[in-house]
Image (cartoon, rainbow, N blue to C red; front, side, top):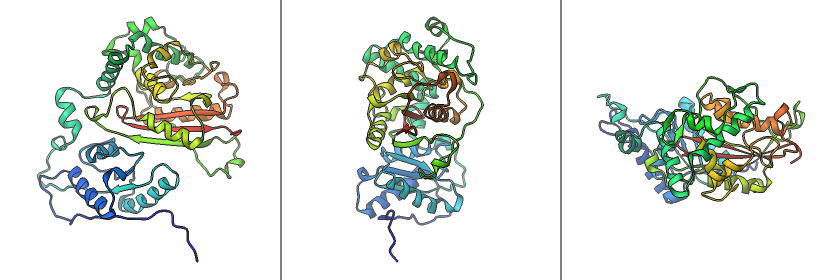
Length: 387
């Protein structure tokens, strides 16, 4: 019987188990195991473009793959957490093979590890870059980090607070056609944004997403099974992913994000480019993110994001609608489900089920996701039934 192999394991390593590991962090254990496994494979670190971790890394309660990648000096095109208890290792292997077969990456490093210190050293004492180089100097929290990105964009390219204010204004305008939006019935002006309290210079209150409660979900099936769906199917045509850092102090750059290589990979997989887009459903936790995403997605030149968001029409009737549901700035950010709302809106648009905010003749949509401080980025190209 012939069997088609899906992927191959080419390197392994295991640290001898110890009853206690005083003075050693989980990240150190992970790094040692990874170094040995990569050496056993005959590869170098630069060949690793995928990373899978377990959910338990004592140095961080979230953004685990980014924290591990940052510590190892990796910038993976695919990163994931597997949380299956004792089945986690086995679950990683087939997921790694699936990612490789999907064209997301070529070589995945899968790692699990934990330290055991009976002295119960506080996690904050662990040697994590964000704890060493950011938090001690007051660089803590998303508002501060995105404000630094906005300040840098202004310093490099002359972007203004007024230009960024247009993002919130235009997304609020879109939200007036979405009764489910938190800010439905509450349009604003540029003057309103600039008059709102300064949260962290140069970001005003209305430049910043409002956290709220909520949820979102979607169902994925094989393309040949989708034909029996009660709705027109929406196809995944291409995807890209990139992780470059966790701590802002470790970012390769502040005004170009990992969305640039992620979008490039998605475009290439889908066989499309910026001019083929009919809709942008893009992550918008802060106004500056929309401007930088427009640049990194090739919609406008680098440095022109401020001018683009100020002059471009975001509405459903424009040449390239943006966040027709109002985005997270106007619809609300229900934690991680807020990011998922960009997928659900794109699906509604592509199956022509968006009601009064429906975009005419929409066939190709760009969806983006952003984690941490423009650290973990995903780009999707979705296509309607006619693609």
